[in-house]
Amino acid sequence: MDLEQISVFMENRPGSLADITRALAQAGVNIRALSLADTADFGILRLVVNQPDTARRALQDGGFTVGMTKVVALEIPDRPGGLGDVLQILAAAAINVEYMYAFVQKSGENAVVIFRFDEPDRAARALREAGIRVLAGEEVYAM
Image (tube, rainbow, N blue to C red; front, side):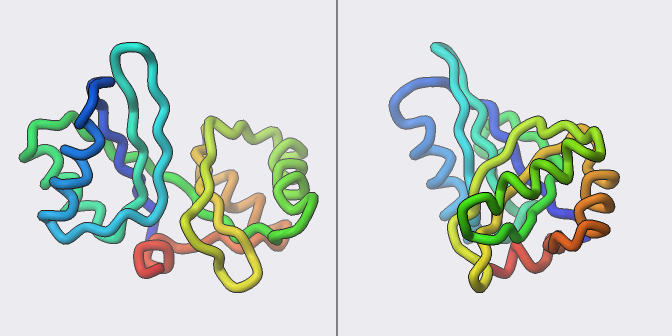
C-alpha cells in the first residue's frame, strides 16, 4: 500500500495550526509526521497521519484546501553518514528529491524519513535494490 501525505493550504495567521489540529483531533486522527513551509501570507502543512482519508474529509469539512500526495518512507541507519548514503544512491540513479522531513519516532535503531520524489515508484525501486528498507503505508500509519 502506498503512503499518502496530506497537504493543507493555510493562512499565515495566529490560530491556523490550532484550527487544523483541532479538526484532526475531533476526527480521532493522530499525526505521525509533519512539515510546515510558509511565506508571508500562506503556508503548506504536510502531514502523515494514521487515517489519511478520515483526515482529508475532516479538514475539507472544516473549510481547508487539502491535497493528497504519494510519499515514500525509508528506514535510514541512525549514524553519521546514514542519510548521505541514501542520497548517494538516489543521485546515482538520477532521482530528484523534491523535499523530505523526519518522522516522529525511530524504527528499531533506524531513523524514519519521509521523502517526496519526482518519480516515487522509480525511487522506491532503486532504494530497495540497494538494500534500503522502504516502509509500506500501513506500517507507517500504525507507528
